[in-house]
Image 1 (cartoon, each protein chain N blue to C red):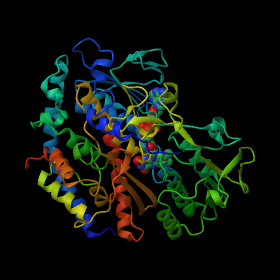
Image 2: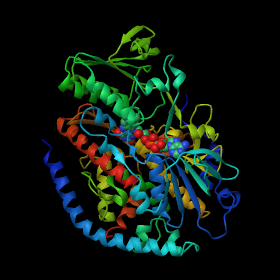
Image 3: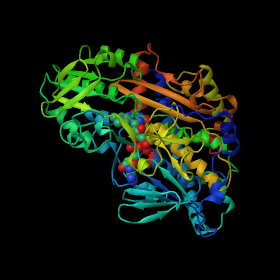
Image 4: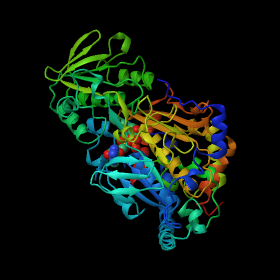
Length: 143
Length: 432
Ligand SMILES: Cc1cc2nc3c(=O)[nH]c(=O)nc-3n(C[C@H](O)[C@H](O)[C@H](O)COP(=O)(O)OP(=O)(O)OC[C@H]3O[C@@H](n4cnc5c(N)ncnc54)[C@H](O)[C@@H]3O)c2cc1C
């Protein structure tokens, strides 16, 4: 049997994902509209196009830290594009900066149980963890 | 072979200052297309590296026009192809297509092969004669095999009797059919290659999952691994798992104990090692490897047979303007994995977005995680976080590492579930 902490994790992540899918649907439409606009103005290197992360510009966030971006892109291989998981691994999408930062710090110190996350978290300085948390925190309504 | 790419200290500081060897070249050196027109990036190869790079280029900067050249309409992933051999997945389960890249991300996908790269004119020629111009080129062609490394072996033999099953697709099906028609009590011989090769734990996960199938269906059978190496990835964990789940079924012979294969005979199904002959009912010889063919033809490889790159942007150190990612690249101590290829694809995409804007790419960190399934509820993993230093791409001390040797059954079962979770997300993140 799985341990109960594992089931709790899966349950929480599924519930959260269910609600997020509604929010996401709207964002997706905004994103597509933004894309279309960008296509029409492709000749001009518009300010919106320079901001890395089309989804983020549609969500109305400001300039993305380029280092935060490259650090965060690797997370999506396990946690899904923009941190939206389609599988059993918990989503990062929608979580706040402070939640992600404290979770990563707890994985890093070993205070929080994990199979693989503590091995990853130990690869980042606290400042880098902050950058990653800020990157994903942009998708959250609670910054 | 020294895998870690040495950079002199002066070069390193220069690299961090300018971000890439040709940050300025991108602006002034490459032939500039009609002023103000959207920038063009061509990607060769729609596997883990190339597909991820194409998607993320479009996602990060929708003003860039991205063309992906890939001959296969359906891509079968090597990850989880060992699960197919065990009967735990079908070939359909490991199929990916380019529909979402085309429709959602507006990547121009061309179903063809690149046959030549002209780095001075910045063009790629396709098999059908079409010529594509680029501002930046990404090359992610995976691996090619050194067919002449084992006397008696050939590509024709691999396509009929001795499959490698190290590029998923018809090769996987061939090995699967051979295993299914093998008698109970037969011997399966697996011959892994010398380092470096794609997916270092791959041959040993394969041995485990073939054992899973044989234990249930043909329990008198045996597996013999003839290895030129004296140690292998996750060795302690694999051996522990084999003892627990398949006692007496798998024998691993190291290089010094006669594992090195010196000849193969496909007619008599005999493998000759430095110590004698072994007959197999099924032989899975995985030849030594080198960068994909197009990388050689474009002069992107060095004497090692792989492609040296600047690890900030994965731009070739031989031909500026061309970025090599995935298995073909020399990425320091990073293993050649789908995860690594995808991570590099995204780093290269982010770097190219900045280079095309005349900006310096941010210093990346690269990540790898490789799950290996030993039995249905039993998986192990290796993780790594990598950084750029004066010695090239190195693992960050204290990070990464293996599933602990004393992991309990709960943890091994969780890792098996996370292996599935990982697969679902990475294929969605790459092709979906
Ligand atoms: C049995 C096995 C199990 C594995 N398991 C895992 C795992 O669990 N986790 C993991 O992370 N990795 C795993 N890997 C490793 C992973 O498959 C590779 O590292 C990964 O595919 C490398 O990505 P790539 O983009 O370099 O090459 P590929 O994914 O091989 O893609 C290369 C693509 O380029 C195309 N191409 C080649 N030449 C041309 C050309 N001239 N023009 C146009 N297109 C071209 C090819 O058709 C191909 O589609 C496994 C490998 C094997 C063999």
